[in-house]
Image (cartoon, rainbow, N blue to C red):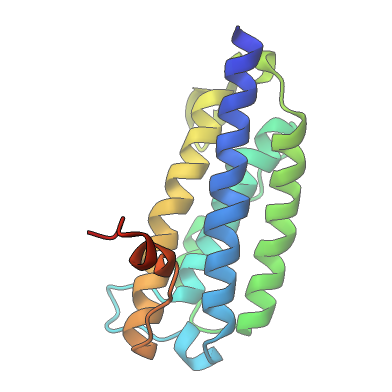
Length: 170
């Protein structure tokens, strides 16, 4: 039964990250200019570029480095301090490579690895905690990216148009 729960949890995590959040966010960002990707409404807010750098750092630290027992070389303050050093395509390429590494990790995780303890960002967490943190964290910033992009473009992103045809949108 535990192996079934492990498989269900990992499958759900993979679907959220790699079938929903990442492809939608990537497509949304691909439609923007570099200027839009680095736009900030004020200095207290993050740009889409900052959020992509931040997601890259988070996914690599919490999933790739932790489960592969790699040294964590994350520079979190740099993720938020950048004001436009990379093009939108370079940002997406970087995050895409990290997402592929994370996908590889999720494809091979075992129940024992999900129950094991890891030191990540100063926290002692289980592998289950780490995966859940990445999915939840990615989902939160994914929503921010979509909101900023929709605000800048004024275009409906159309992710749930099929619901209008089924009556489930009510």
